[in-house]
Length: 483
Image (tube, rainbow, N blue to C red; front, side, top):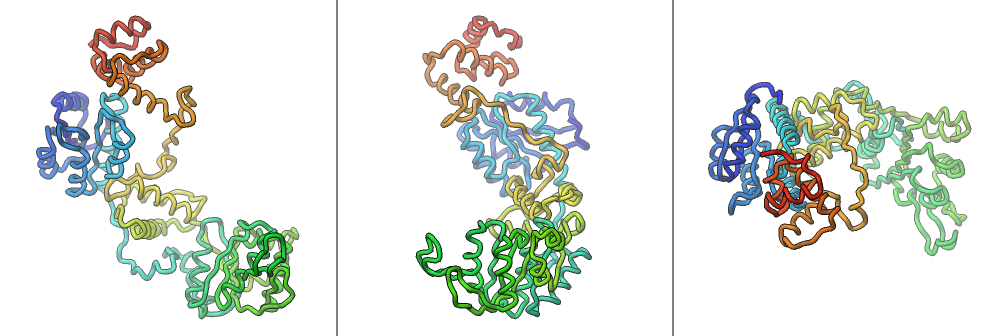
């Protein structure tokens, strides 16, 4: 374990053998191992020594380690805690992670996995030493419209929004997917003389062609099969307000011609109707396509393009304004805490640097999704590198194991099946298993305990002598170590 500087690990467990095991495991590492036999002693050491990580058993006599975890998080919300358990039930794992545990490990230990877990925890603790508090000097009013950033590119967007908002000009917002086109549309509406009226957004690509016309303009009773009542369309619903037409480039040509008529005459006609209805609606359209090129290819009406492109605002991709990433992180974290009644308030320098060097093909939307994920995964009060997607730190995404003959509808994972049967064997020593299944249990017990016969026998609920006899019967002595 190559960790710079001498760090402290506190072990809280009522079994002295566990203390000894950790001391022996970490003897060659630059780590100080502190030990406590109960929660009272552990909390006293925690407050005095301020260890980098705490490794604690979930069950210590009559003490519930989860309750102790709650107290540790009260004392230090950022404390990294690893829980140990011999009972790998789903509820135990869920509760531990809900309370902010960094991770949990099963007894008896898989030594390589344990060392890897400790290394990751110590690295995370090291990262917390350089934690950053994101900018808090921003006025909450700056977040009112949801447009965030102080880069030159965004300053230009703010100027254009400020210039066009007070007018009734039709606006075309362009930019890659995820750059925040609807947010800009909402800002235009919020700063216009129509701000007290309705803002309606519709995604032209998400509605089937045969329904889009009715969605926009409404229909009369009996206009088509299923039209059992008269229905107002979006134009009527937001009369006096603003209508945001997202993905306008995907609008069918037949509907484009009717939209053009609305822009020219200020009137709509419901599907199946003959009476023109006057509407006062400001159109704000958005697209990630090159509409000029689409018009040249006859995929978009050229006359409609010119009608929409009265005033254009182009949004920069996030990769062209990476200096805005820290401010965006602050905004998304604040937004998450507001919606969920709390959550991490800080983020490490390492995590900020990583997020500020990504290409972000999904732009601001991708960053927001990434922050939401990190807020869920963060242990305690701070987001660290480990909470970011593995690909961002050069790690490989976990690969799902191949299908097991023990898995299927209504059946958990293979490991869950074996956990269940291990407990069943302990509860009923007379339980009979098919030879092939019995052999598999012995092999798995030995693999889980790195060949330790005593621990494997304990896991199976049998004596060491019985384990040896059955292992000899199935010819699996090679997996056993001499104690």
